[in-house]
Image (cartoon, rainbow, N blue to C red; front, side, top):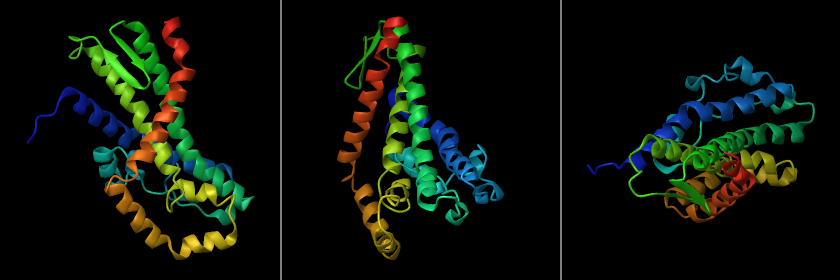
Length: 231
C-alpha cells in the first residue's frame, strides 16, 4: 500500500468533514427552503435537521471521499404544496448549491486570514505557495485544510448545478423550460443518468468541472484579496 503524504491526508480529512458537516448543511438548506415555501414533507420525514445520519448516502459519500464529487440522500419534496410551483421548486433546488458556496466563501475568508498571519505562505492564481521547511508545521496543515474546504465546496456546488436529473441543476433549469422538455427528461431519466455516471467515472467531466471550479475560486479569491493586507 502506497504511503500517504501529509497533503493527501489533510485533503481526505477535509472531505470527511464535508461529508459529516457540509453535506448535511446542503440538504438542510433544501429542507428549510421547502418548508418556507409551504412544503412540510422534509420536516415530517426527519430531514429538517443538521444530523448527518439523516442525510448521508453511502455511495455519494464514498464518491466524495475518493473523487471530490458526491451527494447526500435527496430531500423529499412535494411541489404541489408550493404556492408557485415552478419558481419555488427552482428556489428549493438552488438552496443546496448556494449553501456550499456560502461555506466556501467563509472558508476563503479564514484562509485569507491565515495567509495574512504568516509570510511563509501565499496564494496566486489559485495555487498555494510556501517556504521550504514549513511543510510539517501546524500552520501548514491548517492552511491546507481551509484550502481544501474551499475547493471541495465549490466543486460540490458546481457539480450539483449540472442540469442532469437528479442533480439540483435539472430542477433549476426546469423553471425556464417547457412541460415538453420536462416530459422528455422524465421519460429518459435513467438513460441520461447512466451516460452521466459513465462520463463522471471516466474523468471526461473533469475538464469542464475543474474549469468552472477554478473560475469561482478565482472570483472568491479576488473578493477577499484585501483581507491579507488588513491582517
